Amino acid sequence: MKVELENVLPREIEARSFEIITQELGDTPLIPGTELIVKRCIHTSADFDYAKNLCFSEGAVEKALRAIEGGACIVTDTQMAKAGINKKALARYGGEVYCFMSDEDVARAAKEQGTTRATASMEKAAGLGKPLIFAIGNAPTALVRLYELMEEGKLSPELIIGVPVGFVNVVASKELIMQTDAPYIVAKGRKGGSNIAACICNALLYMLNNSRE
Image (cartoon, rainbow, N blue to C red; front, side):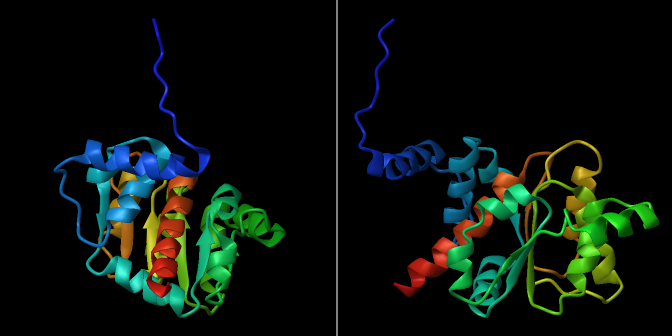
């Protein structure tokens, strides 16, 4: 069987990929202003389900862009997500990326309290005293603790990106976040991951940088 390969220059691969994504999406309805985020999630995962399972609270994208421009920092629940976020782009606006999962005090607190490190890391983040965007791609317990911290009046996130992947409490934790007043971008169902969490952050940064050019 003869294999046909497209003749695409390296610098044109991403643009060609987005052309294919747009063609295959066809008439699939996307919320105005969210198209780039959805397409970048598809580009990262090759999974077109994100066109239907990504949920945005009203004005979430606009609020997130304003928060980033105002110097908001990003807290993730994995070192992988932290590594994938464009820290240089975020730093232009005064923001930093944090992941406390490997911190000794977080490990100690989780052991003493009988909780997960993700839970303890959200508690540590709540004490930063900074405007925060949370990018959660792995641990549903992180989303649950965020929900509790908001209910306790200890935290008011600028945005929650709720895209943990898996089977245990994943769906329920996402539903909790969608019941709050916090701006959110949530991947309903079991799909997600650290790569998707980082991808959404980078899409927001890309949108903001383009608007400045």
